[in-house]
Image (cartoon, rainbow, N blue to C red; front, side, top):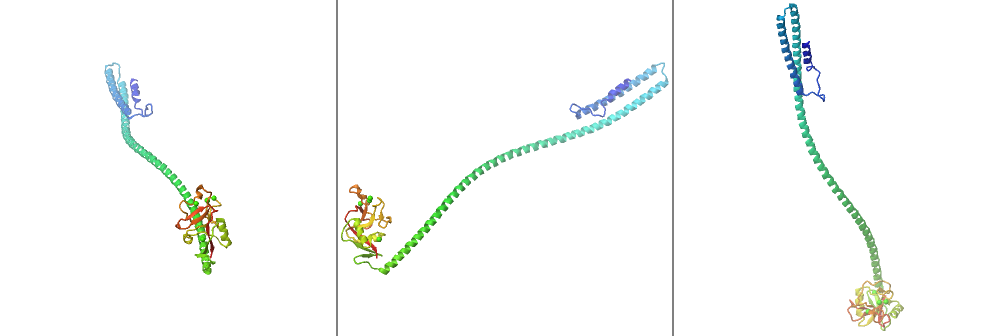
Length: 336
Ligand SMILES: [Ca+2]
Ligand SMILES: [Ca+2]
Ligand SMILES: [Ca+2]
Ligand SMILES: [Ca+2]
């Protein structure tokens, strides 16, 4: 029975089902250690059996009552057990070879996993660098986008202003075109009027007796003096009116025929002080005032609202405003 107990102790560790550690995985190192323990146990068992056999023989020789049949049976049993042990040892050797092969495979797997781990670490570093670069690129694109948005807004405002400016200029252009057309029509009308007068003037070509002709007008210089109002009435009684000076040529002509006299012309600001108008209602556009005139009398002797030409002065500037009740000569003008 002692032999069987030892055999049971030996049989435990070499059980083919894998023992597990706490996590359920048996490490290669532990496997190797178990394998060595099995081999050692088998060796000890063999030595024990041999010792037991020897002691048995010694005891047998010393025994007086032992029989040859008993010895033969014991020998057969021992032989059987030795064979079983040898078979078991062979089985354990095979198990050991299998474990060795498994251990080699595990080492190779470990190396493969280690290389894989290194590769994965390198890949992780590469991806991290890539991520950093992409983040920088994203920030750069975001800044670029912000700048482009600002620039777009600025251009939009500029475009809006330019559009308004263009519309303003278009309206101005339209107005100017209309004004140009109006002036063109006015010019055409004036030219037609001048042509009409020129033709009429060429046909008539005469002035009443005592009147002087210049261009298409007839002029009469009075021989007596009177107020501006009475002078005008005299002209109107003759079918004419006080002279209206339309050009520098006419101004020079009149200045040349009045000698050194002071004569009324058909210009006044009686209706609105400072607003000079000819007797036909047209505003004054071209004037030939004497130095410091018109002065409306300078506040000394009432308002000066009627205009005279001072004879003997330069035709470029010989007008003066005077009191309308002054007694002066005058010039009537009529179309020839
Ligand atoms: Ca005239
Ligand atoms: Ca006045
Ligand atoms: Ca005046
Ligand atoms: Ca004056």
